[in-house]
Amino acid sequence: MSYLSNCRWAARETVRGLRNEPDPFLFSTVLTSLALAVPLFIALVFYGLSEPLRNLPLAVEMPIFTDGSVPVEKVAEDVGNIPGVAETLIIPKDVAFAELNETLGVASKKNAKNPLPDILIATLETHISGERIAETVAAVEALKGVDVVSVETSWHERLGVITRAANTGLAILGVAILALIILVIMGALRRTNRSATEEMRALHLFGASPVFAVRPTAWRGVLMMTAASILALGLTKVGLWAFGNALAEAAALYQTTIVLTLPAWRDCAVFVVFCAVTGGIVASFAALDLWRRVR
Image (cartoon, rainbow, N blue to C red; front, side, top):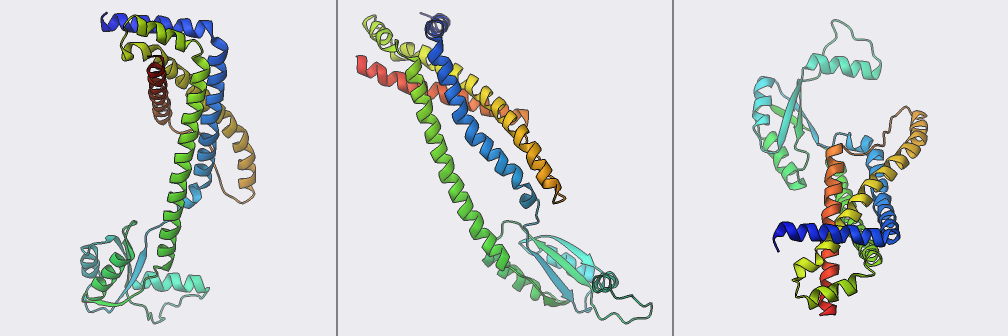
């Protein structure tokens, strides 16, 4: 048989199996959609709630006080050429003095003496280690025209430890959720394959190849996971809409905005395709296991 004929036969068998046993397929699809919707809903809620934290500046800023022996523009150029420095910002001493008086609530006098030097703010790279920060500070302090370098890195180190712990926890949670979803898929596919044993035995007697025999089951898995993923997105959207309205009212009390929404349609399409491919792979392995048992 040609490949096209094999596909036509697999399509007919898939439709026949769904027509003969629609209830197990529908039940398995709904069950799988719930298994997909729960972690998806939780992930999107946490992603929406973490938006204020994700918008916080995470890069270390290093104030540099100049001594006036070298133009501040030259110092800024030298600092910007040091590895680990992402960008530099010059704050003239007049501006710094005016901002200081405003912060202290002191009225500025026209003839008041300004004791501040020109200040340079160096922003370091976001993902930079403590050792690199120390090397960068030492390189800046060695530059001509630099008087004092002030840098606080303890919060950055603590943030790094917390981030690594959070990433480890999320990775473990993701693996557990993926294993749970795969188990649910396998259990759901078993419900939809009650007559698969007899079909496999008959195909084996007629000399069919394993690839030919498992194709209808694989297609059934693809269809089930495609429908389940689309349904899961719909359930998640309804949940985000209901919970998002209540959360928006609570956030308004604190003069902030939190928006819960589905990812972009391209990401949703990737999610559906990933689920469909996963369903096909899991169904194929389940069918191959059944094929080995009936031989």
